[in-house]
Image: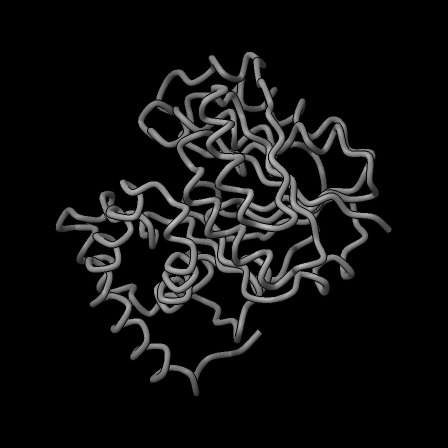
Length: 296
């Protein structure tokens, strides 16, 4: 059974990706990861290649994504600025599944922290499509598309998701919403392999393999959480796992800060200072609640 491991990014996420890739190679020195660089300019691609030369087994691949999906960012989807600008990179992951040559593809978002060897993940799943389910007030059940596994022979996943997107473009849902309506049965991925904010209200995972910083609170950016309402919400939800692992992300960041853009380094240090009280609250809460948690 053979695997290909991929990520996809646009030029706006190059620095963030380097932290994820550093954590990946530290725990998986014998695995190779290919990163699809979506619609980079020649200058952006050359600079990124120089940065990646510091990391073993990370292979950049330039991709020109000219599908009409580039131009479908209309209606209320515009309100979600990240999808307006990053939709080609987030949706291109589905194109990979129709182009794979190995038995399986493991797809990884770049706003992850890899904490362990992924060998158990690569050995465990032999079904068509694997993702992490979560409850959402939008649809009742959705999937988080930050860690996906697909088996060779699923070329219609992108087409079906894209068709559904065109029919429902008035919704504010990111790409996982369309995947979940593409007509495939999905094997549930345990939270330990994709641990993110939305699972933490009902589930604690001891020593997860992968942390996914997929909510508004990201260790590299605090600009989306500076208004009063979000800060208050963060205070009351500070026991969620992601804050506990911010310090680990910062440790990886510090180890490669010299190859990162200076503007990004300043941004991260501002975020680190902003999140200090939430990190401390989260650590205290998780310690206090540990004896009550149902470890998965």
